[in-house]
Length: 458
Image (tube, rainbow, N blue to C red; front, side, top):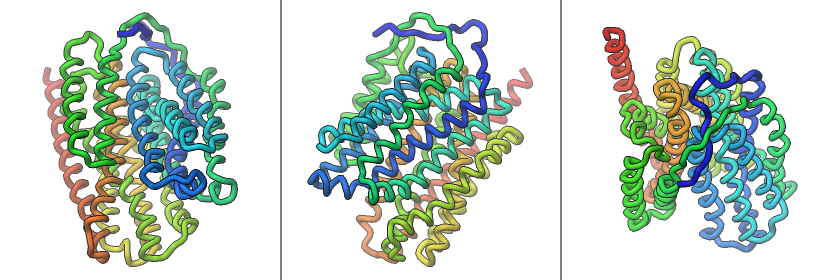
């Protein structure tokens, strides 16, 4: 184990004095990071052509980024329990900025791959630490607003990424995509000035646990992209070793108490299904608009765009709703909107492109509502010392859900021969998953109410 630092557990740390500024700036960085992921996917055909790559080789540009991003998100969140958030963000944004500079001048596959992997290693600091910051420093009465802004910034990034990515690639070239994320370097001095100063003291960090967790998650993500049974079995063995290890160290990389917390696991499942639904929908909409309605990339982007914008506009209202009425009601309404959208997509997605434009608005708002309220609820049910690891696990499982959704959707599209019903089948499956998620949420609510009554009686 290597020695690092942990903040003092005595008096409360200094409060965030510029709360609104920090949340707005952090939402902007989240938007850039998410958009960096989606807009580069649009540029892959141009990358293949310019660097003379085949599809299987080029797929590692996306897969490599996804794997490193998932691991780094969890790692930064866990390290926030030991190292000040400001230092972690400085490291993350610095790596992201340097990687963007390398990518801007890359003209060979190896250099491009290095740039994308380093980008992912730096970008992972942004989403996880955002939720940790909100959970640690923003009072419960205003935390919902902060969570919703961050979640909606991510939704806006998903929607705007293909639009901006296509335009930049077409008129400037894919190298200029790196220039967009390179702007994060300019934000570092501002964050260092605004973020709270945290006191530290030496503590031992579970390096072995972190490595086992990283290898296990990497294996699972590789399994999703390769469907290799040996990789799956190896990943399960590594994760079993990780579980054996973390129960035998004083300060493990992942606390066993969190992993066996039934209420926390229910929230993880709800977020997991929400990400499956949203990522699958984002994957399917361009295919439907192209295959069924013969829309070009610009038209596809403009049809998806209103839903993303509406989600960003609705952020402040979702946040106020959470702060006023609580996470439970917003989670229920968000799941209801997602469920409504999958039912409508299954019935009307191939009838008119305007039906897709309209229905995606329900998806986008429902997704932002669920992710905001679930993240807020996680910070409520976990102790202060568990928030870093808990938010890291939440982000990791949600990201894994997105990757799983896209992979599952791709497989279902491949094995179905009937063109007329393949989209109906997929959206019907998503509807079933959301009904299951809603049932799990009802169990969570009933258990939560029972625990409250038991506390009142004691």
